[in-house]
Length: 205
Figure 1 (tube, rainbow, N blue to C red):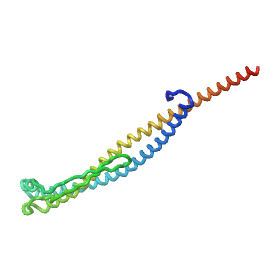
Figure 2 (figure 1 turned 90 degrees about the vertical axis):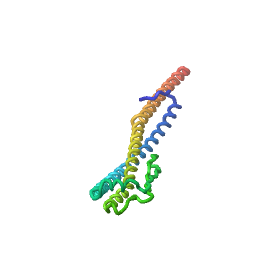
Figure 3 (figure 1 turned 30 degrees about the vertical axis):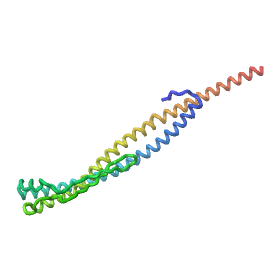
Figure 4 (figure 1 turned 45 degrees about the vertical axis):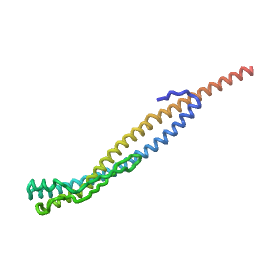
């Protein structure tokens, strides 16, 4: 689609400069999109690996905890887990990936994760709580990957739309307008030359 411009040399130079900038921006955005896709694919594979590992460990934890629950009474179990001494803190920082700020989670635990008497409970309960404590870091890692993938997917979509707008709308419009102005200027130049030649013929006559 032609842009609404006056067909003169100043506009032609201005639009040519816009075309150069648009093509440069297109290349940069295309490179960014491709790089983001590479990172996205790598993190998606890592996400699947971590998820499978977490699911496997959770199933083992459930089995151990279920076994521990069957060996002691419900009241004893509730009393054992009622007053934990451990204090958990999650630190959040951010990392820049191709102009996208993605979160990074770090898990810290202070104190013991069990605070019950070892006389009334079983070794299975100790093992279950230990396993649950160990997978907290893995759960945070999975949450970090999920959030990062979501943010990258949004950025890829935004970049893709910009690339398509440049490739299929702006750059063709600029090229078409440049062609139109060039044709108009050539036409005006031919008309001017014809007029000059007629004037010369009149002067000679």
